[in-house]
Length: 300
Image: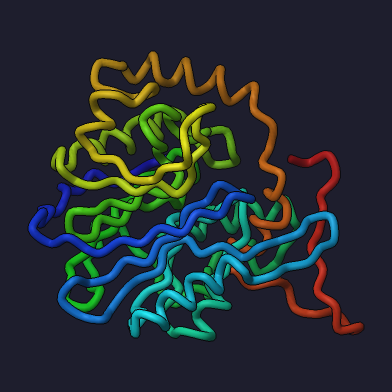
């Protein structure tokens, strides 16, 4: 797995977006509404579609919380951003777009992820690797706007090939790349993942100014701590149990590889990947009007 080495764009710490996090206890996911303080424009990051795996049923309670917040604040959605193709929850991006507008976007390397999992699920659309269901594919270092705010996307692979960190003013949305300091870092054993690449991506994130706020996509708090999702670059460099300053790449790779070998697959990886590599869209209905997801046997 390769990553670009472009110079980091300058972070404007004077721009402080208004960030509202929405925690989903079923998947430990945090979705965000990121508002421009100078206008009514916003972005939504990593929205969750609720899914009952036993019954094969979806519902929209989590997504409706986002919709109600945006409408209640009178906001205009510019972007619906996926930090990567999630393996632990289904995306509500199409549901959000239908109700609020906005462009559904993800990193351009999603085409690589599509091809990898296209083989797993024998999915011709994914095997084509065109990612046509997304409205926009971010490239490394690409600048974009949320209202008057300048934002940029950084390619930070390792957990998956398509992971992107989005830096918006003084805030960085890191997806699954890094967690709260007392939890550590994401696994790197999914198809296309790589522990060494993950370490280098994290060091790239931690080269941002120490005051930069970091917002994580998941929290799995130790016993006795409530879920949390905001930290800083400086705090991560001092306290992260896996990648704080002083921990070498070799030590990290050894730790991450050994730890990943003990982990079971996420409970929702099979339905979520099939949906999320297609921008949250389910397969087309079959001739009986029903949509189906596949379960590959003895493959993952």
